[in-house]
Structures are given as C-alpha cells and as structure tokens.
Image (cartoon, rainbow, N blue to C red):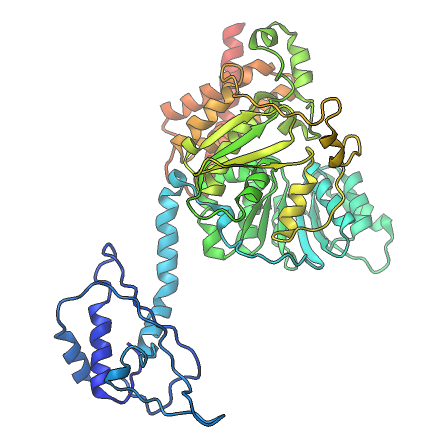
Length: 560
C-alpha cells in the first residue's frame, strides 16, 4: 500500500479504500483503482502505514461499486519558485493525497514477470483456436519518419523474396543495409550479392561451403573479412546477427521455422515471407511475440494488403477478411478440360503464372490454390479472426491484393501492380510511407497507365472459387479448424507432393488426393496433437513428408 502521509486518519482512510476496492478473485470484475505517481519521490518524513491503520482498514464496511480515482500526485504545490511545499494531507484532500506504492510496487514488480509468463503459457495452450492478431503486437507506431541505415538480415537471399529485398536496399541506399545473408546452393549469385553489399556474415548450404570460401577470397576486397558459415547453424546465426534489427524470412517451406524462432528469441523483428513457418509453428510462435517484445510484419502481398487496410480500423471494426487470388494458370479451364490434358503439359503449365514471377514451389501452389488455403490459416494467426470470417475470392487481374469488410459494410481494398517489392518495402519501413518508384516489373509501366483503361487495363473481375476444381482450399480450412499439428501436417505433405511433382514422380491432379489421404492417415494414427511444442511440430513435419511418400507408393502400386 506504499508509504502514507503523516496523518493517521488519512493513512487509515486510504488503506481502507484500497482494501475495499481490491480484486478478491481474478474472475470478479477488477476495480478501476489506479495510482499514477508523478514528480519527486516522497520525502523521508513519510512513514509506512502503522499496524493500527491496517487493523482499522480490516474492519471496513461492505464494498461499494468500483470507482475510478483521479491522478494521485506527489510533488510540489503552489509556492515560491523552486521551493517545495510540504506534503500536507487532510480529510478534505483524501482523493488527491496519497499512497506511494512502495511496498505494493515492489510486490507488483516482483510478480509481474511471473504473471506475464503465466498468461503467455495459458494462451499458448489454446491460441490455435482463436488466432493471435500477431501484426497487432508491438507495431503501435504512427511516425512517417523513414528509417536510417536500418540493418537487416535476409534468409534466402538468392531466392525470389531475397533478390527483391536487395532491390529495395539498392534503390533506397541509406535507408536499409543488409548486414547478413543466408542462401542455399546458388553460390554464383550469392557472391555477386556479397561483392555489392559486403555483408558482415554469410551462410550457404553445406555442400557448397568450400566454393563460397574460395569465391569470397577471390573477390579480393581489401580489409573485408566476413564471417562464413554453412547449414542450419549458419541460417540461425544470420537470423540472430547482433547488428540486425529486422530479419526477412524468405526461405521456402518449413526450413524457415527454426531460424525464425531463434530470431524472435534474439529480439529481432520479423518480416515474414515464409507462409509455412507460421502455418506449421503458429501454436509455438504466436505467444513468443508478447514474451520477447518483437513484431511481425507480413511480406506476402495478400497479408500486406490486409495489414495496410487495417490501419486506422478500431478493434472489433472488421467483419470479414477477403483474400484475393488470381486462380493460377488453370483459372480459365474447367476441371474436365484439365483431366483431358496431357499430364506432362499440366505439370509444365503448373510451374508458370500469368501475373506473378515467383519460385517453382509457390507457383505450383498457386496452380492448385493451396497457396490461398495456406494464407487462410496464416490470416487466422496474423489477424486473430475465426475461419468463418475469412473468405477467398478469385480476382484474375491481381490488381486488388486483398480486402477487408468492416462492420458497417464498407469494403477497403489495397491495389497496385502484382509486385512483391511494395510489400517488402512497407514491411521494412513501417509505419513510414517511403517515396518510391515501383513500375510494373513485367513491362515497366507506371500505375497511372492502368487507369487509362486501355486493353485489359482498368478492369477488375471477381468470383468465388470452384472447390471441385480447387479442393486444396477446402482441405486447408479443414486443417485450420482442426488445429494443433494438422496445419503442419498438411503443409509438409504439400511440400513433399510438390517436390514429387517437380521430379515427375506424380501428376498434377494427384496432389489433392495425396494430401487428403495424409490427413486421414494422421487422424487414424493419432498424429494430431492439439497443444504441440516445438519438438512435436518438427516431428509432425517429418512424419507428414514420410506419409506422403507412403501414400504415393501405395497408390502407384495399386495402379500397377
């Protein structure tokens, strides 16, 4: 109850008031009794409450309704300039004189950390069911001051997201500086990046590590001696690099999960471009943002669009999230036409996209629309919305990148060219809007041309997806609602199925059936854990990949 003023009557009255408005049980409404201490610390003549004061308070009358007190202020009162007036307190000033929360503050401070961790632990157990609104965690800032020399690490620097992130760094020199890069086996491109940006730490796949070392030495940059690493330890070191403020996670698939978790533990903000990390690891990752005080900003064009639309929307103001998707390369074909096509032609076309330039895996996911299904699960975690509040719409032009519907029926959309550089720029510069020149990456036109309405410009169409043609969407909703390790199982099985497609082991139209069979196998073998830890998620990922292989082998044996 703190150190009280000299007056015994005042002391007893304040202690009585505190006791009468203390919360008795955590399920009862908490009193709105607050102290805001300002000014110099209470002087030494302020004594702690006496035993008589506590005894008097203990005999307090029944509690009235909770009250909201004004600011309790310790400090100077009116008087000669520079002279401190005595801390006088009498019955008539009961609401304004007060208790410095010395003893109470010590107890509160000692237990605050424990309560916070306990709350995080409680939420972790059921967080998959409610989502977490991760983008609303630790992102409260409204300055338009652009960053200066913001240091970033990039996981997957030679991939699509990584190269476009470096494009942003190149165009905005002085705002962003890549200080650590992790790549796979593309040593040639990695060395070009090293020569240009001279990062302090570089990591690559173990199989090409010697090439990297020789290549860096051959660059002959005077005084440049970066730290060279390989494998997952190298990825983790890049993710946790001491000077980096933000980590761009561009590694494809569940391989990005462990480095992302370690980056969060190291206090790094996350620019998330890897769907599978959150889809598989949501139950584990979600509570960590509050625990470690970092933020997550989406780099996916759809989720960046939603995040941008949400700016200024009050809590509870959103009725629905609307995820748009192009429909992929087969959007203008019926399922009957697809079944009639040559399997090799289907496989070839599934790796091309009419609007976006992306890697092979995400392009195949766009063709099956599994990417949209995975984004549904991702939206559940990022924005804390139920699955019934998330809708998928096909928008062939890829001009509207997603939308939100507000409670008052207003629909807000974010539009622009199909270009990942804007989501990357916004994730790195948030909350600032940095002046940029980002023409259409395919033809170099500015967006002003689109408004002219010439040819296919100026036109937008929308329709609901055909779930018979795109069954992967329904599978994703089913996995998300099941929760626990099921989204991880679906995501890992899909990665394995796409790899088998690219290796010409399976045909394109087999993917949904394989995924459904793996999900059924997981249920039959009790592999779905509702409150998994990190080890459980890693094991679920491994099991699902093996299960996909088993399912494929069984189907091929049966077909033979």
